[in-house]
Length: 123
Image 1 (cartoon, rainbow, N blue to C red):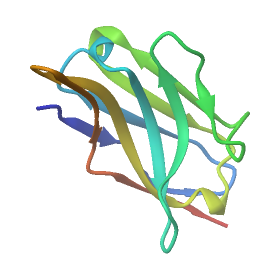
Image 2: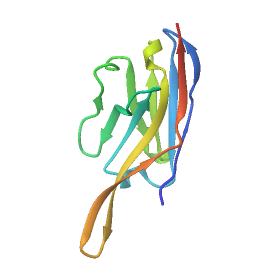
Image 3: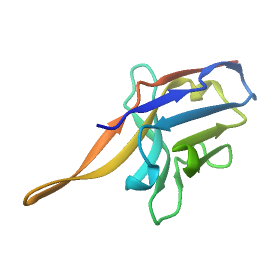
């Protein structure tokens, strides 16, 4: 079983910065992709940033130029650096990992989620 533990959320004023951390229970090389999603009250969960294996990082248009996803392979950790935060960035942020699961004759991709960390940006 995979465990993802997020940290780094909090309350910050508009224009401020936060760095979120996601620590994985196994090598992040084993995942097809790792990323960050967020969910604001009354809204659907949305992709913020993704780091697919062997492919370029992807960002939601709303965070391009302000957020940066990165990783530390030795620490099995993925980060989300968030700069120039806006009130509309307020949400619960979730770490996600996608991994291939196999049983005899069946292969599928599984999603793993962290518990979420609250980010609140005041105006």
